[in-house]
Image (cartoon, rainbow, N blue to C red; front, side, top):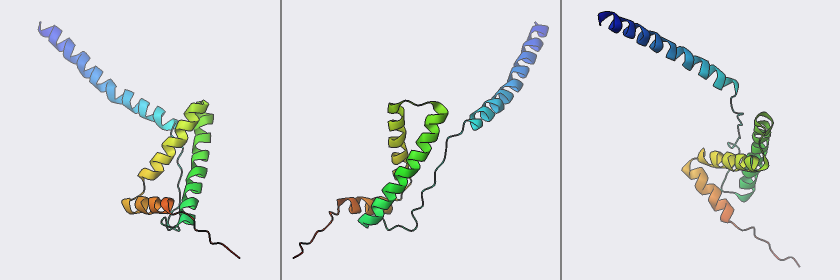
Amino acid sequence: MRKFIARLSTVAALALAIVPVAGLATTAHAQSHSQPVAHIRIGDLKLDRPADAAEFHRRTRDAADTVCAARTHAERLGRLSVYACHRDFHADAQAELSRTQLADLRRAGRAAPTQLAAR
């Protein structure tokens, strides 16, 4: 019985030694297929102004086009997946904004452009 326990503990120790090595191999594989990253500058924008809010949306749309095009090429996405990629990108971009920035962006979206009659 003593030999059986010794062999079992040896096998268990070897199995535990292999697990971290397998984890390292998986991490290296996952890093080789990393997701594309986009940076959107907003420091020069005042998001409570409609024109700047529109510029933010344009920059976000352009960055989403770039990222989703790269993902489409790398992962061979279908049309619905590309649409989902764009929606996810916009949701992630909104999630990165502070509460104040989100409130300013919403305020700018509610502001209707004013047109004056000219004679």
